Length: 166
Length: 465
Image (cartoon, rainbow over all chains, first blue to last red; front, side, top):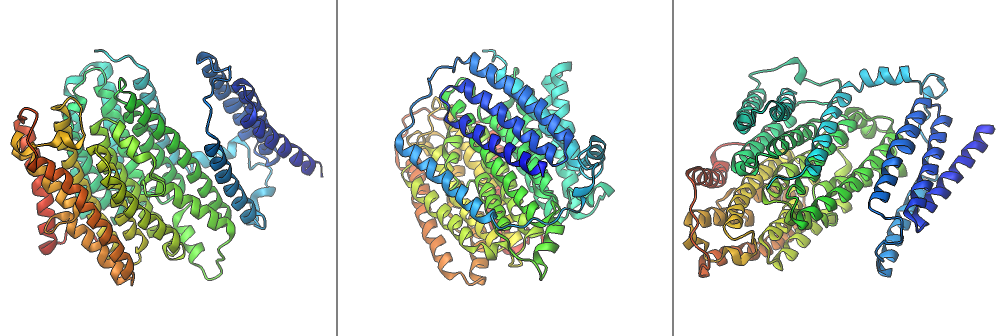
């Protein structure tokens, strides 16, 4: 019972703060509301019995990535309303597109019954030990190949930021 | 799998070259390494060497005949590309970065043609895309290059998000990431297509159509292709496009065989949209690079036709042949375009090609052959590529689609001839171009390949089964 109330509360917080991210004029406020959204999502992970994922989500997203966001906003001095004005047509078009996608998703997924998860009752499902086993067992190949992804992202970042010698 | 290991190792080696300062030798080493990869891929395709790693890597990658053929094609494209665009790596300060990014993106391409798990599809697309976002902006002083990079990055990451959403919904409705599980579940008698499955599938289709720049998801392509340095554009429209479409085809080849039939209307919109939008907008272009970008969109229309009718027995072979023919032709066209660009202060408008035959007949000849092949004039390879695909469409009973495709190609002939006429009928305004011996050999080789692949289709079955 309590989890159900928690679920609705977290959902409300997540959706409400996500809307505020979009609607607030000041980019710093947007970034701060995004942190709230991340915390609410982390709460959902807790409810799904994924403690490790929740912790990582808070540390990585609400911690590292948001600090970077705010840092960039301050470096580029975006904390004024300097955002260029979008034309009304563009706003209407974007709203219609987003609304249609939302409508289709809600209409389509409203009556969906998920395949019952047999392991849902297993209390150890979200623990780090289990995660390690899956990561180095079933998903070993993607885990190792993602090294190439991160290496290329790193090389790319260094390449873009280094000075060209003329 | 061997190819992935070799290429990833080469990528790391190029980075080490920067540290231990043997940068002078690194480009020849990479070419030698790619040659070795090519030999390995060819031997594996023939079944001469077989390592236990190759069978099926923990249900993640499966180097079956389909994957092996495309790995060989991709390696060929990459090898030719590195040799043709050798001067892209001439700048000492960023040589190692350029080379390693290209090599890492190759790893992504290999994953995309051999995945048996959606996790690997996603990772492959990301590994291929992220170096491309960076390389699109590798001409840091050009504003257009920066714009291309940013645009590609923003739109590309959005498309990846949609891909992930689609995969998540597919997982939600079937309970598996593994393609053969998915095949068993979705072809079973008791399978009901739930709304969740449909929405997930549509999202997956949209994301893959975006990655292969099919209309109506093509809006990024002209800007990115025009803004990026010409070498990178030629890599994008050959290697990246081949990987994306091979991954697209593999989706149905392995996991969801009946989807092209069920989602017929979506496919027809993608096909007809790409054919017509690509060809008709290309007519109004004055920039040759932009024109080639739109023409590449129209070629995607043909390739998607092979994917739509993939249940026909020769569809994989036709797609393979189309990609090979298109890649070689595009490499040739972009090689000429790049040489012209370098000799006209970066101008790539059609008027920069004025009187090219008088400035250098070999360049004009190669570009003419390449453009005629793209237009689908027999007996060049482009004709047989189109012929094969139209043939399977006809076999499937889509006579009207064949007519539509032929009409769209006729529009294509018009704008390809615009460049040809500029080369032959106009007077040159710029000085003659002198080519190095290596360039001459490469141009002749590419011309020979374009003509030879066409003639070969009569006598020799190039196509894998």
